[in-house]
Length: 406
Image (tube, rainbow, N blue to C red):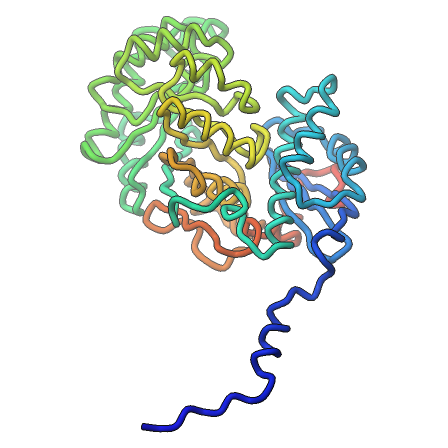
């Protein structure tokens, strides 16, 4: 037996010193600036500090024209310690109660800033966001593939079947399709969205082709984008029952609880809504009065990561699954995944198929592993969110005429 190698005197002390952060104490951390950039429909925010670390966040949809909202909020944040994301988000919301802080643009911007605060806090403390949120129930999150077949002009059932089959071959166990078509020649009136019998037939035939192509076990989600009326919503929910959907998404606009209740209670097809509902307050009656079977807040516009967790926990009290909407970059996807990992009632999360194929989605972020593997997103264990904005790559796709991280 060989003798153990002697340990050099002081080696343990050296290792301990190397493990200690070289920055000043977290209590001395201060926000020095907030900058943003825009690309497509996305807002990208970076919060800078006096210790040379920063946090990144993303907002979507209701962010167009919000540059000066970001700058205004940034002025409020300067000099504050960023390690209190919940407190700061609540301060910002209450300070702008008469400035639109109930929904829409202000909340979408707040969502990006709040996520950046969580990212910054995680980096400062050396912890992933899921740990800051209370720990994780799972290491990876199942995603469904939004096939984005809406990019095809008037697709036919065979197009739906092929897109679904291709997604399943790539390892996805759930797919989503849109069945609202503004250019359907069978529409009688482009303002009244009561679907004609021919439209209903088109919808059913498309999803029936998907079910036939991928078999009985893969999940199918169907989105109507809140474009139809109650009559059509009821018909489609009943019509889809034989196809055993994972859910029917927003058959009517999300602002009428009574209609949602009737559709949800009249059909065995699960009804899903939430991408256009802001803050946890928006879900209280929807859940307490059984207006939906599944909630799908978008964490890049509903109020942020802490608010997303509050919505999930609220839904859990009613035994309702949490399946967040996600149309952002991989920064937004990973931020969402941290919340999905931290709650017990997570079901599945959205993923856009073009993120697998279009180069720009990989160019605008920095991440050293595959985005999705076999239909799952592995939650990062790195401090913060674990994904960085690649400013050089993002600049190639920046919205013209808007300052870029200035």
